[in-house]
Image (cartoon, rainbow, N blue to C red; front, side, top):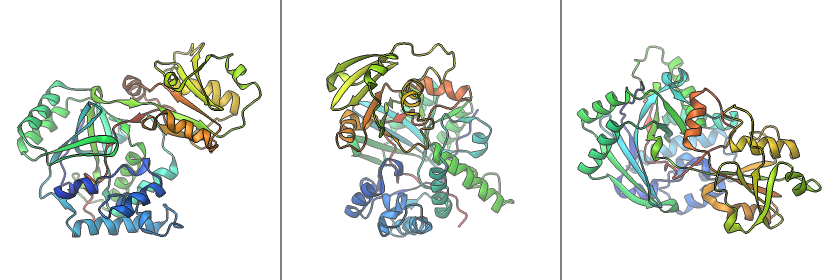
Length: 413
Protein backbone atom coordinates (compact mmCIF):
# COMPACT_ATOMS: atom_id res chain seq x y z
CA UNK A 1 0.00 0.00 0.00
CA UNK A 2 1.32 3.42 -0.95
CA UNK A 3 -0.05 6.91 -0.59
CA UNK A 4 -0.27 9.57 -3.27
CA UNK A 5 -1.35 13.11 -2.49
CA UNK A 6 -2.51 16.08 -4.55
CA UNK A 7 -0.68 19.38 -4.15
CA UNK A 8 -0.93 23.02 -5.17
CA UNK A 9 1.44 22.81 -8.09
CA UNK A 10 3.50 25.77 -9.26
CA UNK A 11 3.59 25.49 -13.03
CA UNK A 12 4.20 27.54 -16.20
CA UNK A 13 1.78 29.91 -17.81
CA UNK A 14 0.37 27.93 -20.75
CA UNK A 15 1.74 30.33 -23.39
CA UNK A 16 5.26 30.11 -21.93
CA UNK A 17 5.54 26.41 -21.16
CA UNK A 18 7.73 25.54 -24.13
CA UNK A 19 10.15 28.35 -23.27
CA UNK A 20 10.26 27.54 -19.55
CA UNK A 21 10.56 23.75 -19.61
CA UNK A 22 14.17 22.57 -19.61
CA UNK A 23 16.24 19.41 -19.51
CA UNK A 24 17.00 18.20 -15.97
CA UNK A 25 19.86 19.86 -14.11
CA UNK A 26 21.93 16.67 -14.03
CA UNK A 27 22.10 16.03 -17.79
CA UNK A 28 23.66 19.42 -18.57
CA UNK A 29 26.92 20.88 -17.35
CA UNK A 30 27.18 24.55 -16.39
CA UNK A 31 28.52 25.61 -19.80
CA UNK A 32 25.73 23.87 -21.69
CA UNK A 33 23.14 25.36 -19.34
CA UNK A 34 24.67 28.83 -19.64
CA UNK A 35 24.49 28.70 -23.44
CA UNK A 36 20.80 27.76 -23.31
CA UNK A 37 19.97 30.28 -20.57
CA UNK A 38 21.64 33.20 -22.32
CA UNK A 39 19.32 32.71 -25.29
CA UNK A 40 16.18 32.27 -23.19
CA UNK A 41 15.32 34.38 -20.12
CA UNK A 42 12.28 32.13 -19.47
CA UNK A 43 14.33 28.92 -19.18
CA UNK A 44 13.89 27.04 -15.92
CA UNK A 45 17.65 26.57 -15.96
CA UNK A 46 17.81 30.02 -14.32
CA UNK A 47 16.30 28.25 -11.30
CA UNK A 48 17.63 24.70 -11.61
CA UNK A 49 21.22 25.74 -12.45
CA UNK A 50 21.29 29.31 -11.20
CA UNK A 51 25.07 29.57 -11.53
CA UNK A 52 24.39 30.58 -15.15
CA UNK A 53 23.31 34.01 -13.84
CA UNK A 54 26.52 34.50 -11.85
CA UNK A 55 30.16 34.96 -12.94
CA UNK A 56 31.63 31.89 -14.64
CA UNK A 57 34.29 31.71 -11.94
CA UNK A 58 31.61 31.02 -9.31
CA UNK A 59 31.40 27.41 -8.18
CA UNK A 60 27.98 25.84 -8.91
CA UNK A 61 27.98 24.76 -5.25
CA UNK A 62 28.58 28.22 -3.81
CA UNK A 63 25.91 29.41 -1.37
CA UNK A 64 25.18 32.39 -3.62
CA UNK A 65 24.02 30.01 -6.36
CA UNK A 66 21.22 28.63 -4.20
CA UNK A 67 20.20 32.11 -3.13
CA UNK A 68 20.10 33.13 -6.79
CA UNK A 69 17.85 30.14 -7.49
CA UNK A 70 15.48 31.26 -4.73
CA UNK A 71 15.37 34.80 -6.11
CA UNK A 72 14.75 33.55 -9.64
CA UNK A 73 11.94 31.24 -8.51
CA UNK A 74 10.28 34.16 -6.74
CA UNK A 75 10.79 36.42 -9.77
CA UNK A 76 9.25 33.87 -12.14
CA UNK A 77 6.15 33.79 -9.94
CA UNK A 78 6.00 37.57 -9.52
CA UNK A 79 6.11 37.95 -13.32
CA UNK A 80 3.38 35.27 -13.60
CA UNK A 81 5.63 33.07 -15.72
CA UNK A 82 4.96 30.44 -13.08
CA UNK A 83 1.62 30.27 -11.27
CA UNK A 84 0.38 28.35 -8.25
CA UNK A 85 -2.85 26.37 -8.21
CA UNK A 86 -5.65 27.55 -5.93
CA UNK A 87 -6.38 24.03 -4.73
CA UNK A 88 -4.53 20.69 -4.47
CA UNK A 89 -4.59 18.80 -7.77
CA UNK A 90 -2.94 15.95 -9.62
CA UNK A 91 -1.58 15.96 -13.16
CA UNK A 92 -1.09 13.38 -15.88
CA UNK A 93 2.22 13.71 -17.73
CA UNK A 94 2.58 11.94 -21.08
CA UNK A 95 5.85 11.72 -23.00
CA UNK A 96 6.14 10.42 -26.57
CA UNK A 97 9.51 9.65 -28.15
CA UNK A 98 9.97 7.84 -31.47
CA UNK A 99 6.51 6.30 -31.14
CA UNK A 100 7.07 5.18 -27.53
CA UNK A 101 4.42 6.58 -25.15
CA UNK A 102 4.43 6.64 -21.35
CA UNK A 103 2.00 8.38 -19.01
CA UNK A 104 2.63 9.13 -15.35
CA UNK A 105 0.72 10.64 -12.45
CA UNK A 106 2.27 13.79 -10.96
CA UNK A 107 1.64 13.82 -7.23
CA UNK A 108 3.36 13.93 -3.87
CA UNK A 109 4.63 10.79 -2.14
CA UNK A 110 5.51 10.10 1.48
CA UNK A 111 8.88 10.64 3.14
CA UNK A 112 7.80 8.13 5.81
CA UNK A 113 7.13 5.46 3.20
CA UNK A 114 10.58 5.99 1.72
CA UNK A 115 12.18 5.60 5.14
CA UNK A 116 10.11 2.47 5.78
CA UNK A 117 11.12 0.89 2.46
CA UNK A 118 7.82 1.11 0.58
CA UNK A 119 9.51 3.43 -1.88
CA UNK A 120 12.48 1.33 -2.91
CA UNK A 121 15.89 2.35 -4.21
CA UNK A 122 18.45 0.50 -6.31
CA UNK A 123 21.45 2.86 -6.25
CA UNK A 124 23.69 4.58 -3.74
CA UNK A 125 24.14 8.33 -3.89
CA UNK A 126 27.24 10.50 -3.96
CA UNK A 127 27.42 12.82 -0.94
CA UNK A 128 28.48 15.92 -2.87
CA UNK A 129 25.65 15.57 -5.41
CA UNK A 130 23.16 14.89 -2.65
CA UNK A 131 24.30 17.96 -0.72
CA UNK A 132 23.86 20.13 -3.81
CA UNK A 133 20.17 19.26 -4.09
CA UNK A 134 19.71 19.52 -0.31
CA UNK A 135 20.98 23.10 -0.47
CA UNK A 136 18.92 23.90 -3.54
CA UNK A 137 15.67 22.54 -2.12
CA UNK A 138 16.27 23.96 1.35
CA UNK A 139 16.95 27.51 0.18
CA UNK A 140 14.14 27.47 -2.40
CA UNK A 141 11.77 25.90 0.16
CA UNK A 142 10.44 23.61 -2.53
CA UNK A 143 10.91 20.42 -4.49
CA UNK A 144 12.09 22.14 -7.66
CA UNK A 145 11.93 19.04 -9.88
CA UNK A 146 10.09 15.73 -9.62
CA UNK A 147 11.43 12.28 -8.78
CA UNK A 148 10.83 9.59 -11.40
CA UNK A 149 9.12 6.60 -9.74
CA UNK A 150 7.67 3.41 -11.15
CA UNK A 151 5.29 0.66 -10.04
CA UNK A 152 3.85 -2.57 -11.34
CA UNK A 153 0.84 -1.68 -13.47
CA UNK A 154 -2.71 -1.98 -12.17
CA UNK A 155 -5.53 -2.26 -14.72
CA UNK A 156 -7.90 -0.03 -12.76
CA UNK A 157 -5.34 2.79 -12.60
CA UNK A 158 -4.53 2.45 -16.31
CA UNK A 159 -8.22 2.58 -17.20
CA UNK A 160 -8.86 5.69 -15.12
CA UNK A 161 -5.88 7.49 -16.65
CA UNK A 162 -6.99 6.60 -20.18
CA UNK A 163 -10.53 7.72 -19.42
CA UNK A 164 -9.37 11.13 -18.16
CA UNK A 165 -7.13 11.65 -21.19
CA UNK A 166 -10.01 10.79 -23.51
CA UNK A 167 -12.48 13.12 -21.80
CA UNK A 168 -10.33 16.21 -21.29
CA UNK A 169 -7.91 18.32 -23.31
CA UNK A 170 -4.30 18.70 -22.17
CA UNK A 171 -3.22 21.99 -20.63
CA UNK A 172 0.20 21.59 -22.27
CA UNK A 173 1.05 20.03 -25.61
CA UNK A 174 4.47 20.76 -27.12
CA UNK A 175 7.53 19.10 -28.62
CA UNK A 176 10.94 19.87 -27.19
CA UNK A 177 14.43 18.44 -26.67
CA UNK A 178 15.29 15.28 -28.66
CA UNK A 179 11.95 15.62 -30.46
CA UNK A 180 9.96 14.42 -27.45
CA UNK A 181 6.30 15.45 -27.27
CA UNK A 182 5.08 16.42 -23.80
CA UNK A 183 1.40 16.57 -22.88
CA UNK A 184 -0.02 17.39 -19.46
CA UNK A 185 -3.58 17.08 -18.16
CA UNK A 186 -4.88 18.80 -15.04
CA UNK A 187 -6.82 16.44 -12.74
CA UNK A 188 -8.87 18.75 -10.55
CA UNK A 189 -12.05 16.79 -9.82
CA UNK A 190 -12.19 15.68 -6.20
CA UNK A 191 -13.95 12.43 -7.04
CA UNK A 192 -11.24 11.33 -9.50
CA UNK A 193 -8.42 12.39 -7.17
CA UNK A 194 -9.98 10.39 -4.34
CA UNK A 195 -10.42 7.39 -6.63
CA UNK A 196 -6.75 7.46 -7.65
CA UNK A 197 -5.67 7.78 -4.03
CA UNK A 198 -7.78 4.74 -3.18
CA UNK A 199 -6.46 2.68 -6.11
CA UNK A 200 -2.86 3.32 -5.16
CA UNK A 201 -3.52 1.79 -1.76
CA UNK A 202 -3.53 -1.50 -3.70
CA UNK A 203 -0.02 -0.84 -5.07
CA UNK A 204 2.42 -2.65 -2.75
CA UNK A 205 5.51 -0.56 -3.51
CA UNK A 206 7.00 2.25 -5.56
CA UNK A 207 10.50 2.15 -7.03
CA UNK A 208 12.92 4.95 -7.82
CA UNK A 209 13.61 4.77 -11.53
CA UNK A 210 15.64 7.98 -11.80
CA UNK A 211 16.41 10.58 -9.16
CA UNK A 212 18.09 8.89 -6.19
CA UNK A 213 19.96 12.08 -5.29
CA UNK A 214 16.79 14.15 -5.48
CA UNK A 215 14.97 11.60 -3.32
CA UNK A 216 17.62 11.54 -0.61
CA UNK A 217 17.83 15.33 -0.61
CA UNK A 218 14.03 15.73 -0.50
CA UNK A 219 13.83 13.36 2.46
CA UNK A 220 16.63 15.08 4.36
CA UNK A 221 15.20 18.55 3.79
CA UNK A 222 11.82 17.21 4.92
CA UNK A 223 13.40 15.82 8.07
CA UNK A 224 15.08 19.17 8.69
CA UNK A 225 11.70 20.91 8.42
CA UNK A 226 10.16 18.37 10.80
CA UNK A 227 12.80 19.33 13.36
CA UNK A 228 12.23 23.03 12.71
CA UNK A 229 8.44 22.74 12.98
CA UNK A 230 7.75 19.94 15.51
CA UNK A 231 4.14 21.06 16.03
CA UNK A 232 3.26 21.08 12.32
CA UNK A 233 0.34 18.83 11.26
CA UNK A 234 1.01 15.44 9.71
CA UNK A 235 -0.16 16.70 6.33
CA UNK A 236 2.45 19.50 6.22
CA UNK A 237 3.87 19.87 2.74
CA UNK A 238 7.43 19.07 3.83
CA UNK A 239 6.35 15.54 4.81
CA UNK A 240 5.94 14.62 1.15
CA UNK A 241 7.98 15.09 -2.02
CA UNK A 242 7.20 15.73 -5.67
CA UNK A 243 7.04 12.59 -7.85
CA UNK A 244 5.87 11.28 -11.21
CA UNK A 245 4.66 7.67 -11.13
CA UNK A 246 4.80 5.54 -14.30
CA UNK A 247 3.81 1.88 -14.67
CA UNK A 248 7.01 -0.09 -15.27
CA UNK A 249 5.51 -1.76 -18.34
CA UNK A 250 5.62 1.60 -20.16
CA UNK A 251 9.23 2.48 -19.36
CA UNK A 252 12.33 2.11 -21.48
CA UNK A 253 15.88 1.89 -20.17
CA UNK A 254 18.73 2.81 -22.51
CA UNK A 255 22.32 1.71 -22.23
CA UNK A 256 24.59 3.60 -19.83
CA UNK A 257 28.06 3.44 -21.33
CA UNK A 258 31.56 3.91 -19.95
CA UNK A 259 34.63 5.83 -21.08
CA UNK A 260 38.06 5.42 -19.46
CA UNK A 261 41.17 7.56 -19.41
CA UNK A 262 43.79 4.94 -18.60
CA UNK A 263 47.05 3.62 -20.06
CA UNK A 264 46.38 0.61 -22.26
CA UNK A 265 48.24 -2.48 -21.01
CA UNK A 266 50.55 -4.36 -23.41
CA UNK A 267 48.68 -7.01 -25.39
CA UNK A 268 45.41 -5.71 -23.99
CA UNK A 269 43.25 -7.28 -26.69
CA UNK A 270 44.97 -10.64 -26.34
CA UNK A 271 44.41 -10.50 -22.58
CA UNK A 272 40.75 -9.66 -23.11
CA UNK A 273 40.35 -12.78 -25.24
CA UNK A 274 40.94 -14.89 -22.16
CA UNK A 275 37.58 -13.69 -20.85
CA UNK A 276 35.62 -12.58 -23.95
CA UNK A 277 35.04 -13.69 -27.49
CA UNK A 278 36.50 -10.78 -29.47
CA UNK A 279 35.66 -9.69 -33.00
CA UNK A 280 36.44 -6.60 -35.06
CA UNK A 281 33.23 -4.97 -36.32
CA UNK A 282 32.07 -1.83 -38.08
CA UNK A 283 30.26 0.78 -36.01
CA UNK A 284 26.93 -0.19 -37.55
CA UNK A 285 27.37 -3.68 -36.07
CA UNK A 286 28.87 -2.67 -32.74
CA UNK A 287 25.83 -1.85 -30.62
CA UNK A 288 25.19 -4.72 -28.15
CA UNK A 289 22.03 -6.67 -28.93
CA UNK A 290 21.71 -9.00 -25.96
CA UNK A 291 22.81 -9.55 -22.37
CA UNK A 292 26.50 -10.29 -21.79
CA UNK A 293 27.33 -8.61 -25.09
CA UNK A 294 29.61 -5.53 -25.04
CA UNK A 295 31.28 -3.19 -27.51
CA UNK A 296 34.79 -1.74 -27.17
CA UNK A 297 36.14 1.29 -29.04
CA UNK A 298 39.92 1.57 -29.10
CA UNK A 299 42.35 3.16 -31.58
CA UNK A 300 39.60 4.08 -34.08
CA UNK A 301 38.30 0.49 -34.15
CA UNK A 302 35.14 -1.13 -32.76
CA UNK A 303 35.17 -4.63 -31.28
CA UNK A 304 32.35 -6.92 -30.25
CA UNK A 305 32.94 -8.60 -26.88
CA UNK A 306 30.87 -11.52 -25.62
CA UNK A 307 31.54 -12.85 -22.15
CA UNK A 308 32.82 -16.44 -22.31
CA UNK A 309 31.71 -17.27 -18.76
CA UNK A 310 29.29 -14.52 -17.65
CA UNK A 311 29.04 -15.77 -14.06
CA UNK A 312 28.37 -18.92 -12.10
CA UNK A 313 27.09 -16.86 -9.17
CA UNK A 314 23.43 -16.94 -8.22
CA UNK A 315 23.77 -13.40 -6.87
CA UNK A 316 21.43 -10.99 -8.70
CA UNK A 317 24.03 -8.23 -8.82
CA UNK A 318 26.78 -10.52 -10.16
CA UNK A 319 24.56 -11.41 -13.12
CA UNK A 320 24.25 -7.80 -14.30
CA UNK A 321 26.32 -6.73 -17.31
CA UNK A 322 27.58 -3.65 -15.48
CA UNK A 323 29.00 -5.96 -12.80
CA UNK A 324 30.61 -8.32 -15.31
CA UNK A 325 32.32 -5.40 -17.06
CA UNK A 326 33.41 -3.95 -13.72
CA UNK A 327 34.97 -7.15 -12.44
CA UNK A 328 36.35 -8.63 -15.65
CA UNK A 329 37.76 -5.42 -17.15
CA UNK A 330 37.85 -2.38 -14.89
CA UNK A 331 39.13 -4.11 -11.77
CA UNK A 332 41.22 -6.77 -13.49
CA UNK A 333 43.10 -4.55 -15.95
CA UNK A 334 42.88 -1.02 -14.51
CA UNK A 335 42.39 -1.47 -10.76
CA UNK A 336 39.27 0.71 -10.86
CA UNK A 337 37.56 -0.41 -7.67
CA UNK A 338 35.01 2.34 -7.00
CA UNK A 339 33.50 3.89 -10.09
CA UNK A 340 31.65 6.45 -7.96
CA UNK A 341 34.89 8.17 -6.99
CA UNK A 342 37.55 7.13 -9.51
CA UNK A 343 38.31 10.08 -11.78
CA UNK A 344 39.57 7.83 -14.59
CA UNK A 345 36.07 6.76 -15.56
CA UNK A 346 33.05 8.64 -16.82
CA UNK A 347 29.59 7.72 -18.06
CA UNK A 348 27.69 8.47 -21.25
CA UNK A 349 23.92 8.05 -21.57
CA UNK A 350 22.74 5.92 -24.47
CA UNK A 351 20.75 8.80 -25.96
CA UNK A 352 24.10 10.19 -27.19
CA UNK A 353 24.80 7.05 -29.17
CA UNK A 354 28.06 5.45 -30.26
CA UNK A 355 29.09 8.67 -32.01
CA UNK A 356 29.68 10.34 -28.65
CA UNK A 357 31.88 7.46 -27.49
CA UNK A 358 33.94 7.76 -30.67
CA UNK A 359 34.25 11.51 -30.26
CA UNK A 360 35.47 11.30 -26.68
CA UNK A 361 38.13 8.74 -27.57
CA UNK A 362 39.17 10.26 -30.88
CA UNK A 363 39.76 13.69 -29.34
CA UNK A 364 41.93 11.96 -26.69
CA UNK A 365 39.74 12.98 -23.75
CA UNK A 366 39.56 9.26 -23.02
CA UNK A 367 41.57 6.30 -24.25
CA UNK A 368 38.83 3.71 -24.73
CA UNK A 369 35.06 3.31 -24.48
CA UNK A 370 32.63 0.48 -23.70
CA UNK A 371 28.99 0.23 -24.79
CA UNK A 372 26.60 -2.08 -22.91
CA UNK A 373 23.25 -3.75 -23.42
CA UNK A 374 20.61 -1.91 -21.35
CA UNK A 375 19.61 -3.09 -17.90
CA UNK A 376 15.98 -4.28 -17.93
CA UNK A 377 13.08 -3.04 -15.81
CA UNK A 378 12.70 -6.54 -14.37
CA UNK A 379 16.35 -6.42 -13.27
CA UNK A 380 15.75 -3.08 -11.56
CA UNK A 381 12.64 -4.18 -9.66
CA UNK A 382 14.18 -7.54 -8.76
CA UNK A 383 17.24 -5.85 -7.26
CA UNK A 384 15.12 -3.36 -5.31
CA UNK A 385 12.73 -6.06 -4.03
CA UNK A 386 15.69 -7.94 -2.58
CA UNK A 387 16.94 -4.82 -0.84
CA UNK A 388 20.08 -4.80 -2.99
CA UNK A 389 21.96 -1.99 -4.70
CA UNK A 390 22.97 -1.89 -8.35
CA UNK A 391 26.41 -0.65 -9.35
CA UNK A 392 26.38 3.11 -10.02
CA UNK A 393 25.22 4.29 -13.41
CA UNK A 394 23.39 1.07 -14.28
CA UNK A 395 20.33 2.69 -15.85
CA UNK A 396 19.65 5.57 -18.23
CA UNK A 397 15.98 6.38 -18.78
CA UNK A 398 14.62 8.08 -21.86
CA UNK A 399 12.71 10.18 -22.48
CA UNK A 400 13.74 12.51 -19.67
CA UNK A 401 11.15 14.30 -17.57
CA UNK A 402 11.49 18.01 -18.19
CA UNK A 403 12.11 20.35 -15.28
CA UNK A 404 10.03 23.46 -14.72
CA UNK A 405 6.66 21.88 -15.43
CA UNK A 406 5.90 21.23 -11.76
CA UNK A 407 7.20 22.71 -8.50
CA UNK A 408 6.07 21.67 -5.01
CA UNK A 409 6.09 24.44 -2.39
CA UNK A 410 6.92 23.48 1.22
CA UNK A 411 5.02 26.61 2.35
CA UNK A 412 7.31 27.34 5.30
CA UNK A 413 8.78 30.66 4.12
